[in-house]
Length: 212
Image 1 (cartoon, rainbow, N blue to C red):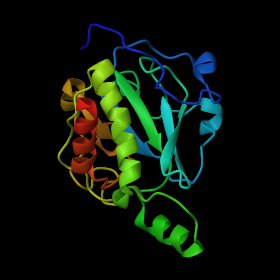
Image 2: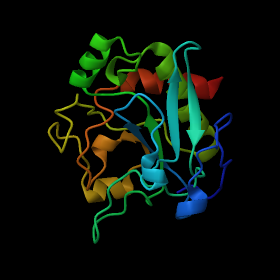
Image 3: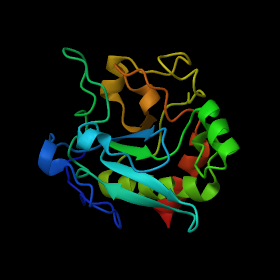
């Protein structure tokens, strides 16, 4: 675990939707990033913050960039993971959570595409979107020592739901994990996001950005 505390606000992130004052959270030294997809097309209200992550990335298609919103400090636990009583810790286990607005569901992607609704289908995300997520990962690596590594299995949704792709960690592995993973990998959770995101490309972009 890191013995130092880095900056608590991601540069440029909007803090108009700040939930830490209402929900508090546990202080920790982050060494894990969990990536989610919102399965929606805009910034969620997260039930007034009750199920909010640390950050949300909203696509700006005209500018080809992600607009970041921060809801909790980097080193404060957020609320987007299920955490069963008496099991392993999830939200509070040194985890910084980022929700990516868009979908990993091919059926929802097809529906939105047929409507002409602009969105990011994260398994086939445009390079600008992956690079923007990678910049966040690189910043977390530089300032919070989060390793730029993660699981090898990133099965496509809906196979990734539950443990259909054999990707979900058990408690012991989760307790020892440091790096970047998806909601699909966290124990005590059943969601399959972010699906088959191009994790190899994402890490490559992040490693390059961390060296710039």
